[in-house]
Length: 304
Image 1: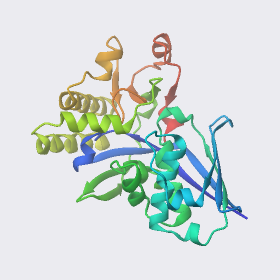
Image 2 (image 1 turned 45 degrees about the horizontal axis):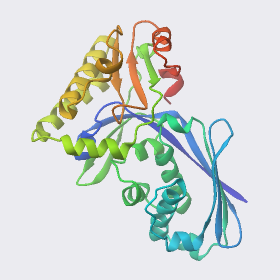
Image 3 (image 1 turned 90 degrees about the vertical axis):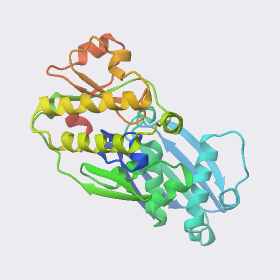
């Protein structure tokens, strides 16, 4: 007998970084995600195998129950040590899967390339939480950290407005189905960005205008969600990008990489990698291909 779990990937449209301090973030669950299949095993261990989107195995290991319940500290972070950290924190929340289990065979499978940054970790954490019937937001905080918007996307099949109130995740489903989505594209920058590194950079650069910055972000986020036409949506998106550029003391992605592009380009999530949102009157595929970017996905093919 086997049990299967699935979680959606994520894209953060507004509120990056500031969401960590209570700002409202607009996020979209993606059509891409990850599943996790659990079968009974033996010998007090987990035989773990992870498949990439193309069916290739990118990780395979044996993890013993003792490694999960009493992990040995390692100075070198590997895929296995990261997995053990997550499973150890899960064990602390629900020890029964080890105390009452004989062993497991677990497989995971991504429907997107793992370097895309659509939530390889968050979909895994949410799937493990579903399996063990524990709170995914707590598991995230105890293992990886972060705001938790990605967990909210993993659990929802519609656009969401996400915020933290006194550390508690607040998730509100919102309606976002504008007529202009045929002008929206997602372009992969050929570089996976580390959320941990980006968050550390944000905290180092955070200035004394946090409350004002959050108010500005929240007003822009509302304008993005409520935009009635492409021009008002593009204006709000551009305003958001400029505001974050000032806070992070970084060039916008358009200034840095695409200064001659006739349209809007916005960073999504951690600045400097993963996907960007592109707003363009015409299909921008030829432009981005000429710059060496091959992955251009229309909104309708990316978003649930």
